[in-house]
Image (cartoon, rainbow, N blue to C red):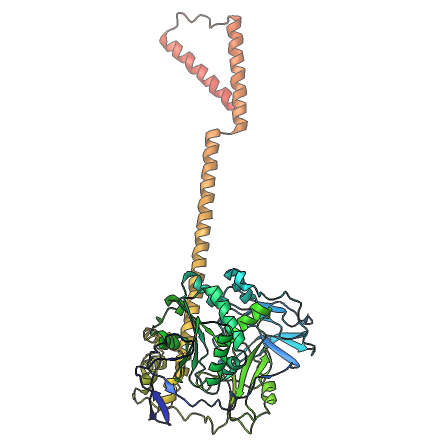
Length: 575
């Protein structure tokens, strides 16, 4: 993909779409013909200080703040209480539901509290966390050996092992890895894509990881190949990652693996985005409401792949990650492997502290990162970068001005949306129209806001609208659930009432058919007595006297007298 830059306000370079030559591959196979995607930016890398220095170890902090929510989906369920002693690798919070992730103790120590603490999130809100006072021994929990024979193990068992290891996407999204891999059950995976393209400025953690631990990543790829059975596999890096590419190629040669291809892609932001990278390498577009697996492609971050290797081969859950600590506000920028829960402040002090007064402290890069409240927030599984910037490096944005309809935002949007229209809909609160214009296809890359001459914080508008829509949908779901529960309750009450009514009707009918048992017994006794009297009279030969010459009228009167007598007898019995 050949790109040219032309100057935009602020000296920004915007990608021009042109057909590219063949990609640079080093596997000896046919080169991959790269495609283009709409928009994008050429940005300064600012990685020269961090990409050349080896990864440093942060050590064990005195206090670990381990949030229960470090991933997409439901927060983990706490399994410890204050006062409990925990060992390194011990499960301290279990996944709640399918889309969730386990949390483990990053080091040994005592649980001193379970409380809400500041949490690295764009909202700036607090979140429940497990506070561990470490003992410095870093004592591991006794666990079983790894699954070195994974080739002989069913993929379902490996997926369960990955789930219990608490692995999530380390590229920033934090989606539980076993869920992503599990979606391939209903899809044939044609391409396994390992994303090593760090396109955002300053961030170099994956670059250093590939330089120093290439063999682990390659073995992690082999594990994924066993689980997914893909037809092809590509590891994508950016053109500036020369040292990482050489290390990865050496690892492939050592493994004698000719089925995995290394492909270099141009340094265009945001080429590291999953859908943009798929577009570059295959020319395929992932439909807005679908996933890459729906078109036969599964993408995994290089760091996630290394974590899968550690979990499967050594039975080590996700306890640490590599973080780029950089910016003009840091004295000695570096890539540091830090335990989950380590306060930002500890890593900044390891890099020599602040370099004068900083303007902002961000988690993530300058384009998609967000400001954190202070440096006491902890490292979480999705913390790829701590960026301390000075006023000269990243000045506060000028006041927002009215949109001048210049369409620069539309030109650079990599998702090929209409940012100006989305802005108007978001500004006016017309959320339905924003959804009609595919608001949720926005990846919040910040390209539109970067080139906006009116300094409109477009991404903030989009994030707010997405939050409002999600809140509205959640409220609607709650309302629908309440309505369904009310309707079900009403139907249940009506059914119970109908069943009781039918039961009473059946009982009444039964009583009418069977009669009163006591009364029936009494009537039967009377009838039996009358029959005995008749039999006695018949046996004694008693018959009516002088009835031969009676007139019809006299006979009728006799019958009436007998009838009255019988009626009088029945009344007496009833009393």
